[in-house]
Image (cartoon, rainbow, N blue to C red):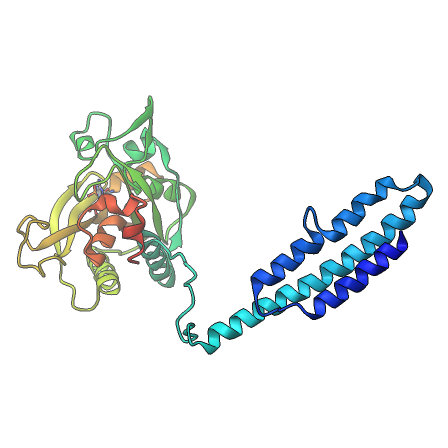
Length: 340
Ligand code: FA5
């Protein structure tokens, strides 16, 4: 039987010499001839079972060695055939090697994330500490300590999600002020970025959005300090030319209180549908800390004064990128996200 193996090996070597490796189909047919299901080597291997038991191991070993040799030679022939095919294609000029390759898709940061990081950077550089607070607050932190007792009419200003009796999804970041004042002694400056929740839904109001609270407490802090800090902040966010205005307003936890507006980016201040014809867009609330809030946190309101503010990050993103609908920011729509 070993002669059979030797003669097949010799025949294979001869056959290989004459193989046209420039044609892939011929190489494949050659592989089938020797290693296919009914191939010559496969056939030889099948004959092992017809031999006397004592001869089988030696014969099987020799055929397997032949099989490995044949497979290696054919693999080389396949590589040669592939290279020949590529050479042919290149010489025919069918491949433009100057074409750009397939792009590797890369993600990018979300515009709201970018704005949050920018705000944190800006205030950190001014010595503000960052406290992220918590999404779930008790009534005390979200309302009462902020000078808003249960039947106070100003509770209607923020339509709140109640989780349980006296437990809410925070409707603003102002509650973090209280936690901070309970655990820190003035003087201090802090910001509190985070998600907030309200029963609200239209083009400029979302049920979940982000705010960033700010609080500064020290001796002799005035409303002028507040205006100065916020003007510089707006210049940083929207550029040197941005127009701002403070409108008298009301918040139970600040006195006096104001709303801060920036000139509408959609119409440049002319007045349009988006700014309801006013030329301005509301961006946040602010004011001097109400002495009752200091009292609730054990801070001496005779000695210390302070200012606080709270901005909507989604509104800042809308203004900065001229986004017409607030819900696009959380829609997870790739067509929208790919623009950033
Ligand atoms: C407040 O939430 C106050 N806590 C802000 C504050 C802090 C005042 C400290 C004084 C001192 P207001 O409800 O106006 O205020 O919300 C502040 C900002 O959040 C708004 O100007 C707006 O930019 C944004 N905002 C409010 N409601 C929504 C909403 N549903 N969707 C998106 N942004 C909103």
